[in-house]
Amino acid sequence: MKFFGFGKKERVIDLTKYKRRQEETSKNRAVVEIAKEPQKNVFGLFDNSLISVNQNASNLNEDTEDKKKKLAKRLADMTTQIENISNQIYHLSQRVEVLERKSGVNSGN
Image (cartoon, rainbow, N blue to C red; front, side, top):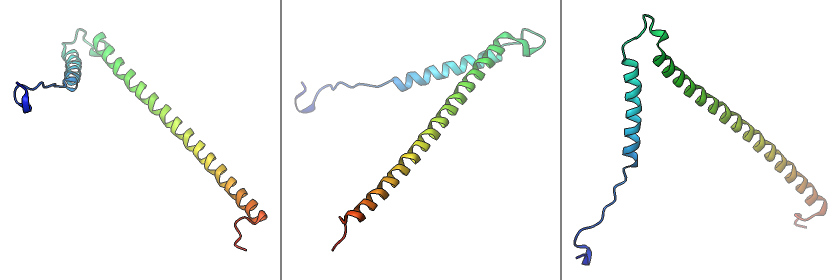
């Protein structure tokens, strides 16, 4: 019976954050396991698996740096546009004041 709030209540649990954490930790573990694998070559620098991991990491770094540069450029462009519009508003307000003085709209006489 569910009269007056008694009885079993349905509860919903959101596990999306938990799943995301699991995915991130599994990815991190995979990278660590690849890095811990014994070297196949005498020269560890030429191991294909380590090179591919390093390339993926460098690609991610380049992507984030490109995104940062694009964002910085967009912000700079937006700032200049805002400054231009602000200047236009200032000039228009100055023109309105001149016209008001000529027409005598704001004069108390």
